[in-house]
Amino acid sequence: MFSRLFRKEPAQPAGPPPFDTNPALDDHALRDAMARVDTGDWTAARDVVAAAGNNWELRGRRRTLLAGRATENESWLYAWLRAAPDDPDAVLMQALLLNMRAGEARGSAPAAQTSREQFQAFAALSDAAAQVSRRAIALAGPDDPGPWIELLDSMFADGRGDSQEFAETLAEARRRDPFNFDLNVTLVSIYCQKWYGSHEQMFSVARQVSAAAPPGATAVMMPFLAHFEYAMREFSWNKATAQSLADVAMYFQRPEVQAELDACTAKWRAGAHTHGPGRPMTMRNWLALYYFLSNRPAEGRAVFAEIGPYMGGTFAWEYFLGPAENGFTLAWRFCHKASPA
Figure 1 (cartoon, rainbow, N blue to C red):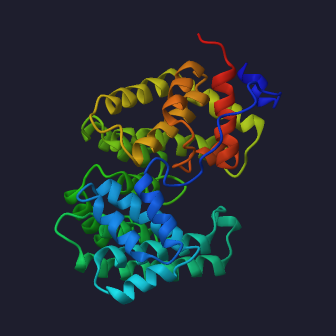
Figure 2: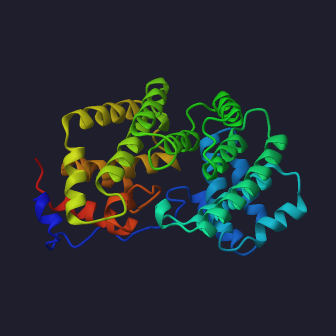
């Protein structure tokens, strides 16, 4: 059955429910705010971020997605900065926007396919993001980890993972919110082989935080990201073919891989915070991709029922299957056409 999918034979049923590709997913307060900033109402961004309170993971996700909206139209963000130049959330979103611009300037191609001019723009915009992040740090409250996480993100341009500033910034972010999703995604990413580390370093970081995190924390699921990164680098680097997908699937069907990821899943689901808007839906998308790749359609169907129409929230769909919608559709069809075990 799985091999028929790799050969691109027609799958039944025809497809999943209509996609809802709004990046806010099930965070309906954020959806409303994003629509309002499109009309220039920056107070909507201020208010929805403030409404997250001390839920730093939700607050950070809202800031990130609003900054992403500003990549298409930044006028409302700069209107906010003019009206309240010392608002820590507005300043931090400016840093987020600059880091996003840096990523756009570099592009997503491997280093060998990236021009000198792209690297120079990446470095210049990352430096600007670092400067604004330091200003956000000066304005931040005593517990918000966001500016420190953003300063870490700006360090991708020059690989300062072993610098004193990196160590101090990481220590302060961890002191404030050690199991924060964005913080730990940054760490797993910067220590992966694709960037400045190795498979061994990446797995070590992911497993350490997963073991230390309480049940229900998204940090429990960091080994998923490490396995996705490993499989992408080893079997699907700069390509997406039927053979690469088959190789990735064989990797996720290894007993030791499934044992680790199933243990992470059980620990995450044992917590009290696996519902509500934001990152829990990202975790469900990780699970759906995992069950598809590991040939476990019954469990995949159950997760897709939890996801409903909220496709996305993770770049992992694009690692093996091309555009995210393509991957989501293939996985949904596979899990729903298979007979229950």
